[in-house]
Amino acid sequence: MKYSLVPTVFSVSGMTIREYQTTDVESLRRAANVPDIAVMTASMPYPYRRRDAVTWIQLCRRRYRQRPVNERHYVITCGQEVIGAVSASRHGDEAEIGYWLTPAYWGQGRMTKVVRKFVPFVFSWWPVVRVIGRTLLNNPASGRVLEKSGFYRTANEIHAVRKGQKWLDLLVYAKYRR
Image (cartoon, rainbow, N blue to C red; front, side, top):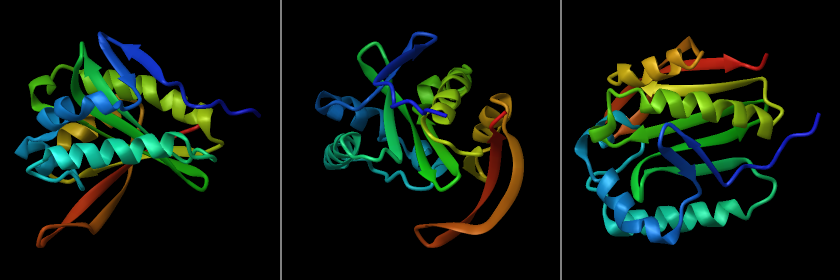
């Protein structure tokens, strides 16, 4: 079976999912510099400073050139503004996706549409058995995104992530190759 390389751009419902560009720095900083995003994600810092955006974009752009391709990060834009991100990383026979969306776009079904379009690409890129998504226990909306995208809850990970001085629990969801 032949697996494809990562597309550089695709669209869904008025949003564009594409590789990060150096011109995304300020827009990314604005979109990510929100306390609610930091609370709902395992690794997003707050405040999200310009240097965080610069460092992240430089890292992603280096990874775009690496082979083999085991990790991909995309920015989600609406018009020219960054509104979120989606990523996938391969770990042996499974891949993991992650995503975030700025709060102004929450509750509109946008991330569900992105995940539904993104996951088939992930299966086409790598010979993985399943794609998983992990959500913080305090982020049930993210679990609903995965469930509406055909994922099933498969596990709880107790004290799986340390954020500041707290250990947080994760819920694990999986979608299997058919």
